[in-house]
Structures are given as structure tokens and as C-alpha cells.
Image (cartoon, rainbow, N blue to C red; front, side, top):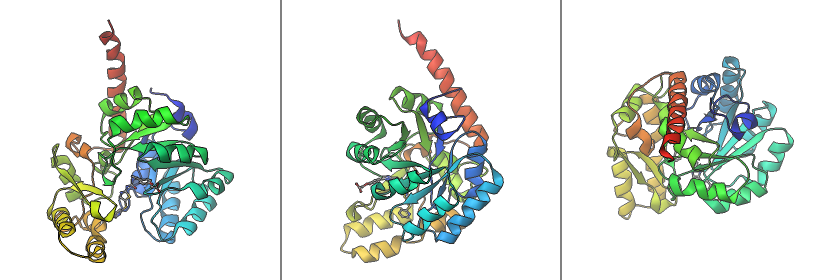
Length: 314
Ligand code: TUI
């Protein structure tokens, strides 16, 4: 049993969170994670409000345990989705890709917990002041939209800067990562990539297999010139995107080229033209197993490591 401030704050058994992933973390995955004692988070992406409400209801039908909804701040439906989360009494609202400062009070008044993803100390401090209940400190090892600081230096700096529980994310896929995160002062971890390679995740089998086959240098970043770097598994699509950025293709054209690529990979399994967003932890993922097995293995491994470390102190 690994118990931190996070277990009580979120009403969960293990301090293990499944990061919200657009098109990937649907009701099936989210309910499985929450049922297994972690916290599942629905990926809002830029999906329309009806889709999000339907996913919330489907998740509720599969689990009575707490779960969250991730709202990326670039969604064109921000107000509607916030209202849906309040109406549906979702336990936790997670945010990403921007600052949720202005709407934290309305969510808290409605009794929801707010757990933003941050990739800098400055934003962590600002959001704690504005009422965030916990913060996910996400390093650039993560998949999808990323910041520019690595997990190992970012997490302890955020821990030093705030009092609320800090959740480490980016580069974590097993019990070694969980033990390391706790050693850095984190109250728990969040993983995305590891949860894609599970039987419950609805992502196409081709996507899951790409993660399992990936080794240490399998991912690359692109989108730096647009101000929104993205990490994904290196494939013809990612290479072409990066090349377009280095030539004089207009920003609009590049954005249009990239639109819909994640969904193409997740739903059609197109590993050539789709965007296989995944983190550097892909290299650590060796099998496709159930969510329960991922969590149980990880917690058992971390417990063993932590107990074994006693022997290192002379
Ligand atoms: O949000 C993510 N990762 C994502 S979102 C996403 S959806 C997408 N779909 C298609 C194309 C592109 C994206 C895929 N991956 N992670 C959380 C995260 N948030 N990482 C970094 C940040 C972040 C960055 C800047 C949070 C706040 C921030 O604030 C800037 C400011 O306003 O101060």
C-alpha cells in the first residue's frame, strides 16, 4: 500500500493517475483505472460538448468511483464543457495546455477538485494562489503537448514552490518511476503512454504495438516553430511535419496538415499518416496488459524498491 496526501484528497486507493488523452482515454479506460484504485481522466480534446457529456455518463455507468475530465484550454467549447462537468458533478477537473486561473473559483464553489497540469514553477505558484487542489508537474519526456523542462529537475522545484500535493508526470511507466517520483517529493504520478498499451484502451492495436516496439530514441518533437511542441513516435507524418516547419510553408498550412492526425492514428490505426503521440517512456513499455495489472505491478515494484533502499543507508 502506498499512501500519500493524494489518496485522501482524491478518494483513491493508489496514488496513480491516468492522464487525460484526447480520443484515447474514453470511458472504457477511465472506468478501468478508477475501478483498479487509481484515478481515470477522460480526455476532452477539442471534442464537442455532447460527446464529453456522453463519455461522462458512460463512465458513471461503469464505475461508482471518482474520475476526472481533462479540459485542454484550447478547446473551442470551454464554457460549455465546464458547465457539463459541474452539472454532472465530476470529481476532478484536470486542465492542460494553458492556465485555467480564471475559472478555478467557479469549479471549487461547485465542489469539484481542480488539478491543472503545469510545466513551470511560475505557473504552479500562480495556480496554487488561485485555488488549485493539486498540481501535475509534467516534464518534457511526456507525449503530446509538452513544456521544456525535464521531469527530474521540474518536480522537486515545483514541490519546493507549493504546498498542495504535486503529481509527477513525464517519463514514468513502472514502479521505478513511482518510487523515484516519491523520492522527489511528489505525492503520486500521472501516466499516459503506459495506459495506452492496455487491453481496455480503445486505441487501435497498431498504435499500441508501436509503443511496445518503441525503444529509447523512438520519439521526436515537432511544432516548436508554432510555439506548441508535440512529442510523438517518429514516423513519416512526424518527419514531414518537422520538415514543413523548416521550409517556408505558412503556419496555417502546417496547422491544417496536422489537424485530425491523432484521431487517424487512434481510430484507424494509420501509423504512417497519423500522429502517434506518446512519451519517452514508450521505451519502457514491453507488453499490452490489463489496467489492473499495470497498477498492481507498479505499486508492488515501488514498494519493493522503497523497502530495499533502507539497505543502502549505511
Ligand atoms: O496538454 C497536454 N498534452 C496534450 S494536449 C493534446 S491535444 C492535441 N491534439 C492535437 C494536436 C495538439 C494537441 C495532446 N497532448 N499536457 C499538459 C500540458 N500542459 N503540458 C504542458 C502544459 C502547459 C503548457 C503551458 C500548461 C500550461 C501552460 O501555460 C502557459 C501559460 O498560460 O502560462
